[in-house]
Structures are given as structure tokens and as C-alpha cells.
Image 1 (cartoon, rainbow, N blue to C red):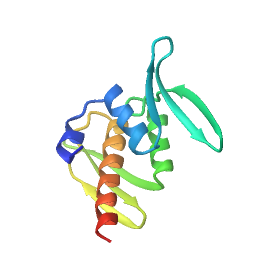
Image 2: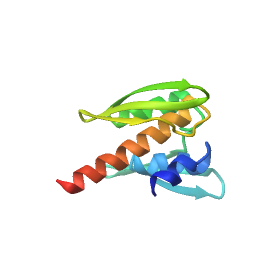
Image 3: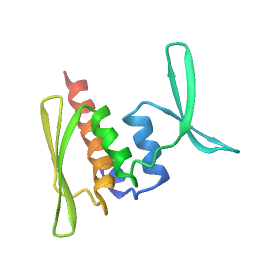
Image 4: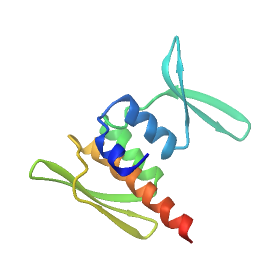
Length: 124
């Protein structure tokens, strides 16, 4: 997914799934009974949980920063959200995240920082 596609995403299911997959390395399934679920696998066990609402719930969004081992300075300036993200001693600046809330801004900033970090890792 490119930068424009990430910035164009709205809060909700698609953005939450992308965060679960890209940031948390979780698999997503839609169960006919329980709905949207993520799969946690590790050390011989598998468990399921409901898809967190990362782009709508501030507490869930803050877990993104903890998982990504990042810090973010988010500010709303003239109606737009901007972010300074530090990840692995590298700073990323996003002047307009096209976000309507802090939690949406956290999701987009984390996805963009990971994308940039992956790009620099592949160059090394």
C-alpha cells in the first residue's frame, strides 16, 4: 500500500485491519458468528480476540506506539493533524495525516513510519 492510499483511509474496519496486520503481525478473519477477529499465534498456541478499534479508540491506538517502540508528538494545527514520530532512533515528520482524530493520526503515522523504516532496511 502506498502513502497516498494510507492517507486516504478513513477510520474504521479497513484501517484497523491494516494496523493489526502491519504493526501487530496478526492474522485477520471474519467469523460468521463472532464477526471480526484477529489471531494470536505463538509458542504452540493460538488464540482469538475481537479486532481492536485502533482508529476509533484512543487506548487501543496508544498500544500501537508501545508495540512499534515509538514515540509520537501529534498536534492539531489549522484543522489538520501532524506528527513527529521517533522509531529506532530515526525521526519521521508527517505534516498532514488527513486525519479527523488523534487515534486515526496515530494509526496513519505508525503505518507510514513502518513503511519508511522497511524501505531503509531494504537499502542496507
